[in-house]
Length: 160
Image 1 (cartoon, one colour):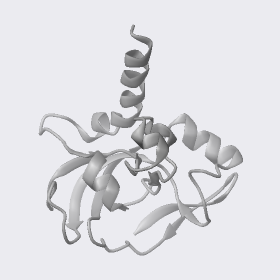
Image 2 (cartoon, one colour; image 1 turned 30 degrees about the horizontal axis):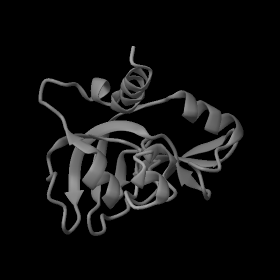
Image 3 (tube, one colour; image 1 turned 90 degrees about the vertical axis):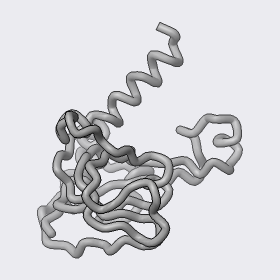
């Protein structure tokens, strides 16, 4: 498949790479829409040691698409489902997760690689943060799910 690979600040390349087959609990999604957010721009400009732990790495994290393949044990989605997934999922067991401060999770699963034809979504994200889309919601609008979640979270925290 064609995919944008991140090699370091201001160094990305469109390359041919293999689609990672789904392991237990994982799914492969055909990307139908991928967005660029401020974090992507900052990562491109100066790097991001939390999101990009090794290079080369897939790039981009806001997307929606169609489930292409499912790994063993996946029960909440099936091939052909229209989906959106968050780019992370907390462990649920660490100190911060027990305090319901999931954004501070010490074992946060992160996902990059949305600027590609396909993306393999980790099991924890599939289980906790993958949603099936209603038929009347476009892929472009669905890809805004993660930034919209940030806005909703901010409104709830500030009690606007």
